[in-house]
Length: 498
Ligand SMILES: Cc1cc2nc3c(=O)[nH]c(=O)nc-3n(C[C@H](O)[C@H](O)[C@H](O)COP(=O)(O)OP(=O)(O)OC[C@H]3O[C@@H](n4cnc5c(N)ncnc54)[C@H](O)[C@@H]3O)c2cc1C
Ligand code: FES
Ligand code: FES
Image 1 (cartoon, rainbow, N blue to C red):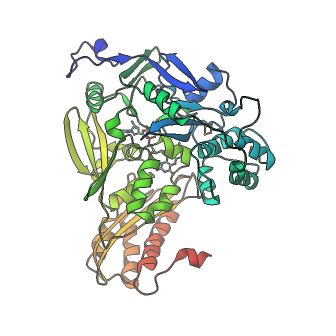
Image 2: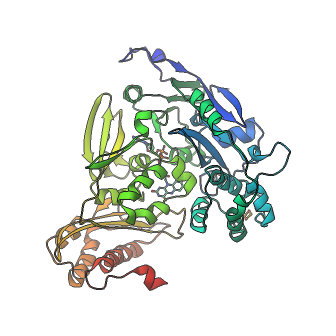
Image 3: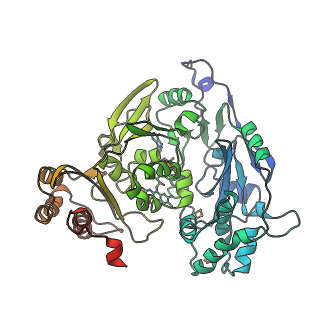
């Protein structure tokens, strides 16, 4: 069904919105135009089935293995930004106005290999070969961004690429040396001009037998469109929505994409808050938040993988409202608020009030999250968030804990404790908080608090963890937070484990 004004027989609130029905993007320097692409066709399907570019592989079709990694470039603040993303869960239409690079794009004019590829060959970094194009592309994004990587950067950049034949050593070695080869010159200014010329300035309205896809270019258009079509699926980075299509085989017959709305791409820092728009990616949001809250850096690094963080948004994580979502416990603990929009009306609420029950939230029909407001760092705040999962990188939490503490001398003047993975929604430990507030920050009180946590939560058993494990581990994390923050001989777990 088409959502645009002309097909609904209604008068748009602000006059007719001009729109187009084809997308344009750059591939190997050529402008590619696709008329009326299927709304949920993935970039990977398009590459492999329509263009016969089969270098990008399909492994998992859910953003986990990295075999499908491609690089998307955009002009941002007068520079080109190259980012590796998972082609299997990225919808083709989201490429509108961008440049796409696949492993085939790296072929040099003389037929030779790109430095990234040469380095992988020279350091014997390919065994099965199936996953190799994905590794090449993650490293290519790094190369294009001019980064001379150290080991930690490479670990992070490759967090979304699985090699099951234990080839990581040589792959990392190849990444360390890819800059040793003669540099490939690139005409960045020309690319910026070309991307600026392709930047969407009109709403994209695609209608096909498979459904419709709409990408408004202003907040007002978006709000009006969603108000009139509250059953449409909002698409931000697609790292949850993409899986509805590839794994749940759901047919989305109305999609409204947020990614072309400039107002939603902003991060606004004031003296009191950091406001992050609904189209800001996890990677960009985390980079800013880590400046104010450096103790969250590990949590941010362990959130999915770099390609997922390049596509997914912070607000998408909040809106999705998964009980095991990683950003919500800590955002709730530090008092984040959200701005909701329904047509031209806006309202604010504390993030914790958004969640009413499993997959139930306080958003009304046609209402969406415009931004999330995170309070500016307050002096005296003691903060930690811990993620427990089976793997360090790219794994879903069994539970995720956040503690925000303020002390007055040795007394707790305020404590917020929030958990993911312990209930049907991200939830605060109200009874434990009430008990600890006003008490001294002492071993004895913490031991009692650990017992009270069992009243706050009755977790479930599932494939990630048993209820008993979750109960015990949540109490242990409170104890760990205490040990790390007590005034006498605070514990440094990294020293203890070393
Ligand atoms: C391989 C992989 C690993 C992952 N690892 C993690 C992890 O470690 N931790 C974690 O928490 N999550 C993880 N995720 C989940 C996902 O990446 C996050 O939830 C992400 O933040 C979703 O953002 P998005 O922009 O991609 O949302 P989308 O997929 O576009 O949307 C998600 C949901 O929110 C709705 N929505 C989006 N924006 C708005 C808005 N502004 N207003 C109202 N509704 C909106 C959509 O309609 C949809 O229901 C992982 C996903 C994958 C594929
Ligand atoms: S096919 Fe595995 S991440 Fe895309
Ligand atoms: S090279 Fe493919 S699994 Fe290691």
